[in-house]
Image (cartoon, rainbow, N blue to C red; front, side, top):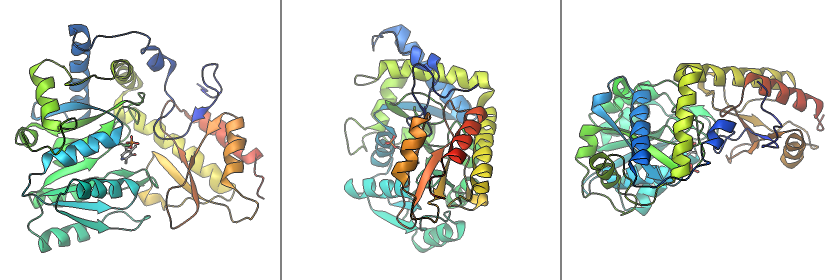
Length: 371
Ligand SMILES: *Cc1c(COP(=O)(O)O)cnc(C)c1O
């Protein structure tokens, strides 16, 4: 299926969030819902159950909380709600989203240690282990799984193992990977996993969600440093009142997300989606390399979510020119986001299929204005 240049959409978004969604996901929003009616609350409960099922087969031990706002609001609700006053957070940083977690902790006045890994290297178990051994006052560890800044994939299983061996609470920003990369929160020992509606589940933007280990969330009452971002309170209300949100919820967006979850199942679940994204990425990189364009990252740390390319070595190249030409032919790409190198980024997620990627690389091959 080629989704480029549809009547309702002049271009395919190759930007990982917001991303291209199916006409049926968008169509699901064409109905108004009451926030406290059973019809809507039952829908919310179904969404919460489905999220837990996607995260682990051990569904009794975990629960899901939905939170208004973009993904960062959900991250901030976790950071601000789960670390007690006496706690200390360790943040592993190798991009803008890891840095944002550190910034949130700082603004919230939480005792924090930050370990930096530069912009193009994964976080390492050695540095994590050494930091935990040197400072036993650390109680919580947070890191990003897929750092969307570059598309780097941090070694989730290995890092989680170290955190769990040291008996710390584990917070993972899996915003751009959950739903597109297989993972089991029980096996990994993740206490709080964060993602949002408009990434790999392929919904539209408007809320984020947290898959939490019940026993880890239950101890967080009264700890939040914010009223509207109080994770425990949001959860307790949803739990006790059968899917009710505390404040106005993005009803249309939740309905679209429910449809997106059904479509994820129809596609064959996360395994099938990961396969499609991986194929998208492979088609993209193979042709781009053939055209002389280099990826920023080495293959072993590259995620199937988004790929960063170095600017070609030519004074004729400008990102703006490439962007405009691709947009004209039905594709919107992303600028780079790191300081160490000039890059642009192309996302593989959303309602984007191998045929779209093949058309994209054909368009790029025809538009090499810089050579
Ligand atoms: C998208 C994303 C976020 C959240 O960004 P918002 O703009 O607030 O939705 C956080 N972390 C990562 C890794 C992301 O990709």
